[in-house]
Picture 1 (cartoon, rainbow, N blue to C red):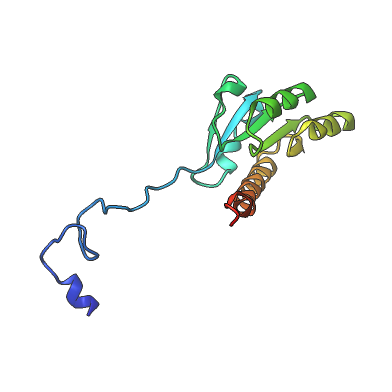
Picture 2: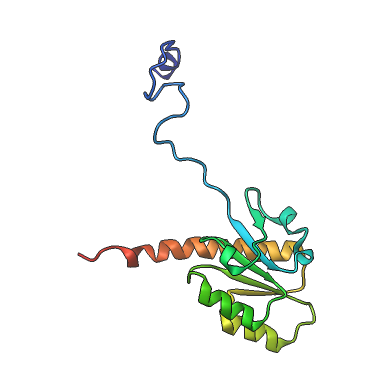
Length: 154
């Protein structure tokens, strides 16, 4: 039966065996996750090579340039930077902070207390990329978890 359908020489647009492109109602491919990098660009220069395919890096000038759904990566952030980001960005935005290898424990505790989701010491791109991937997984999991809360009660 399938062979017979595929042998059909007549192109009937918008039918299941149609060869017309694009097919209506076909979902367009979604863009991959985007990481908005704020701060020192040099510290994350090779990060893109360690991210999964489809991921991209952007370098907005300020927090105002961060788009909804992006993961925010602060390179060399302070507690004040994280507080400002939490105040300006939607609650579900993931914030990752990259600090120096020798950063004091007080700084790590301060940025996490201020609202950072992750604080990574040092700048090994593979480790940082794995933290970003984990953030994306949590972001997607939270979306499904909160789905039941957003349903109308009835």
